[in-house]
Amino acid sequence: MNFIQTNKKEINMLLVFTIFTLLQFGWFILFGLSLLTNSNLADSEFIISAIAFTVPAIIGIILFKKEIIESFAYFKEKTILKIVSVPLVVLFTVIVEQTVMRFLALGQPENQEQLLETGAEIPLIFTLLVFGILGPILEEIIFRHIILNRFSHYIGTAIASIISILIFTFLHTNQLSDYALYLPGAVILTAAYLISNRSLAYVMAIHVLNNSIAFIQLHMS
Image 1 (tube, one colour):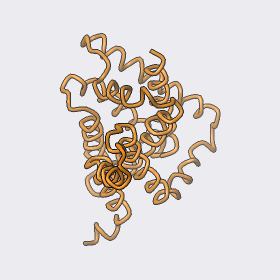
Image 2 (cartoon, helix red, strand yellow):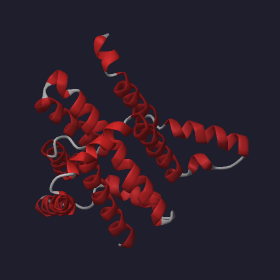
Image 3 (cartoon, rainbow, N blue to C red):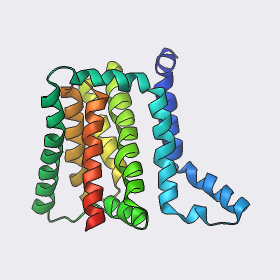
Image 4 (cartoon, rainbow, N blue to C red):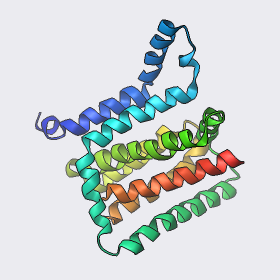
């Protein structure tokens, strides 16, 4: 009971994430609206994905706005160096992922191809807003702040890190071959979070920049 009371906000956020992102509750909302308006809203993969990320992301930002704002304190010292390190970490991530892809002779992850198809007919700005900004913000709140940071007080940082990395990786794909592509990114984001004294702002910046660049490249290809 003490665990629940102490982490009530975090548990509520995990429930919101599960309902909207994992169980796709947004589809049921769209299905109901489709029946009322005699439209095909429930057939739009992008709208379904947008609800799945946008609703819990906004709720997460509201619930954890204090933690997010406070995490910017990491940039107070050696500001320029830390800002420059963001694209450098992204570059390192890309190099590692490309190396893994070539070594294992793998193509683009199926999840990325599906997201590209989903946003193919949508203006790039909206695709970036949902998948490049809100998605990463939501995932950092869930996987780094809640699962890693909060739960590490009960199970230790090492175990919490492993659990965070594995869940993050497994939720991004159900293809065995793609696990090798998502695992390095999960490890790098986790390491960046811990090295930055658990700064949400820092790891969010890395994740947002990484996703945005990836979607711009996919959109232009």
